Length: 114
Image 1: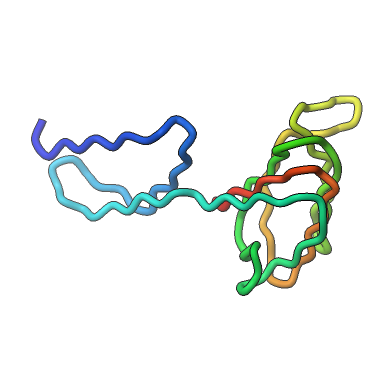
Image 2: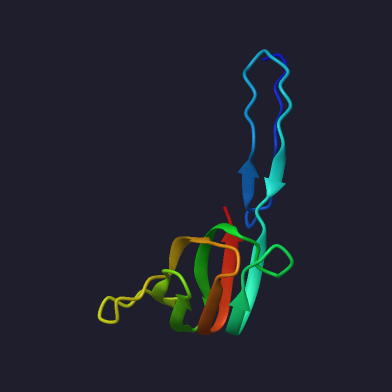
C-alpha cells in the first residue's frame, strides 16, 4: 500500500489526534500526548496561570477514595474501586472554568485534559 505510515506508542500512552489524513493524500496530522495533572488532597483554583487550565477533563482517582467538589457544579464521590452502596465512581468527565475552585480529599487524583 502506497503512503502507508505506522505509529506505535507505549501501552500506557494517551494521545489526542487533532486532524485526520485521507488514504492517498498528504494531509498534515498532529498527534499530541494528553496532558495529565496529578493532585493530592487540597484546594485548587482553575486559571490560565495556574496548574489547572480551563477546559474539559476526565477526572479519576489515582489512590484512595473521597469527594471531589467545585464552586460550580461538581459533587462526586470517587475511588479507585467503584462502590455502589456509596454511589462512588472510578472516573467522570467535567468542564472546569476559569476561577473555579476544585476541592478534593482523595490521597491522589488525576486530571486528564480531553
